[in-house]
Image: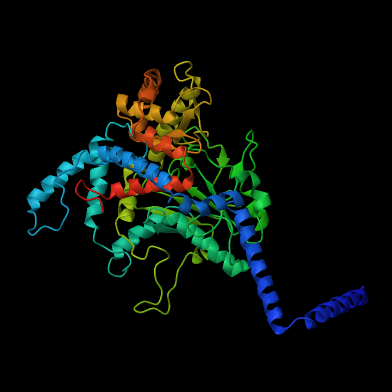
Length: 527
């Protein structure tokens, strides 16, 4: 066998040498460059096919040129102008003493405090009656005033300097200590998932030599995965999978560990079998899903470190933990894995090693309110069980009413499963209903501020303590909204999302730019 391989090697070498001798040096260089170019093109084509697909890539590449065509440009500008007018009608309705430049003289404290009190009451009035989705998870003035007082006492302290602020560091550590696994307190809204992905990227590089990981998301240039095809998509460059408990848009808890009678494939099995990471995004449900069993409504799937394949979990005390905004905890199965989250800058000036990751400046506020909220007597473990019972109970009542309240809501159906604290619903195919118009009608009838989804078109309600008290009212007013010809509401979210759902992604981005620009504008400022 060895002699046969050697003979074939000699024969191939002889053919290659004989052919190359017929070429001059320039031809050899062109051949080598051509082969390198072909290899690079093949690699790029394979990446396109594996991520976006060739058709979508071609469409996305051509879209910037298409948007420059006069008819297309005109249509876009007209659509943007309409969206801007609708948004300004909502966002600019309650402006109080707008100031668009630095004043020549300072405002007296008493006057400024009076203005802030007015703005504070203004920001309460749209959610205090419990007709909103998410946003404010507790709502009682006593709780918010108490936590806010503690929050304000430490507003200017910086836990980056732990030796200067030992009490701040202690409270930071106490929040992490309340979970029985190595953790890290995160203060930037999306940093907990970013740090988890950074951990897996660096872990894959350090332990397996993976330089271009191909699972996770857009921010780090890492690909997304279809749960139904998890096993077939895992390869040598896979460093982690991500599941949700629950998923934010529809409230579905991913099958991290499937339990009978649910026959969905368990996401945790491939990681445990292949030796890759599994991150569970429990940010929304971190203080609901763990208490569901004690509240009498066990979750449909296992999701925590009792599931063998789970390696990191993120949860947000600032949601159903009722802490102020800016406090999240990222948990690790081991301290060794947590080490891969750390970022060291040993050659820069001033410091040898620094903070754990992307947000260099750490704020000393969310953790303090989080520590305070977790310490308060009524939000002890029994308190979270009680709040979970109210929230999950209200979620289930709303979810059960949507498809069964025929004929008054016969045109609607659930999107997802409403496993914990979110209900999403859309119009049944052929019903003739526009779910975005239903949402606008609900706002007109009962002041409901709901979120809207696309792909598929749906309306989203994250049930909080204030909302849970209004579950019956929501169902009654949803019936009224469907009966009251919701199609007459063509503006607002129906106009914005209806237009967006019919546009290519690149055009939707143009509409989103208008929204973000309007968010940072005042009536005299449209920069």
